[in-house]
Length: 328
Image (cartoon, rainbow, N blue to C red; front, side, top):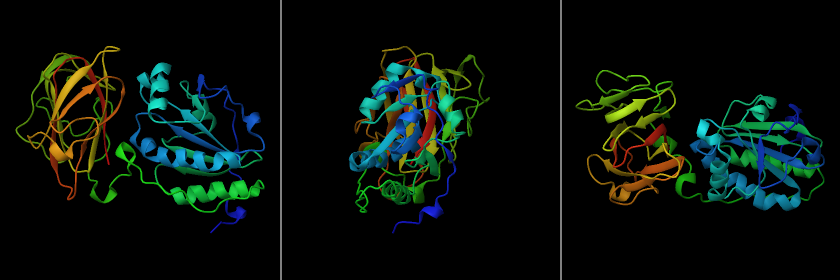
């Protein structure tokens, strides 16, 4: 059912978008250009698993409602420095099938204009330029679509009140929240938790690490020659490993080659064995994969029942940067 418009009072006016450093999929868009159109502003960054899992719904709303007057504007606000590189953003938007205009927000100007603090974040704007609703984080997709329908109806559109029907696949599949006992964890020392290599991290210096005899749930360790930095941890020579005991259906790791256009081969084991049926989409049954460009890599997808597993990734080449583990 539609909710009454009084349940969605004006929260703010649509801020300007002129702080964007570049635009993809369109010429620059100004807030004034959007008057008379219902607008959905979608904040994200391309390595964020939470934004990735919301993307199929935004994509479906574009497909269904664009012809009825909906305009979707993506705002790519980087978390990591490499996400500022326009070529990388452009490749990611194409690979992820982002079809709508994207404001590249490297200076955080649009982020600050909205006083935003989250990836993903959705802002729902009526045809008069008023922000009428917002949604932070994943979920509540039915509610969000109902708000879009309400705003389009207010604008005089004869709206199809059915809801989009989706079956997301691959990395876009919603998390298995019931089986999720491992939280996002960064590999750089600025936000890392649970690091257990003997002696702890040696900050910003090259150091040879060893692993403890065992790991408890949500502990992780390095072996080999690594440089642990504030944001990322860099493997200095081949043969280094990262081990992590986790409890989740999915395990992802944001990585990139330390040298542009290089490739870093790796092998993955789960509980000491090749992953077989629990391999993620970025490796094969034997656990083989390659870090070829900056992005989120899905490395494990468990099948029911979900249980504690020991993840180990060994890099056969040096020069990989590891940023953050996420789970689903």
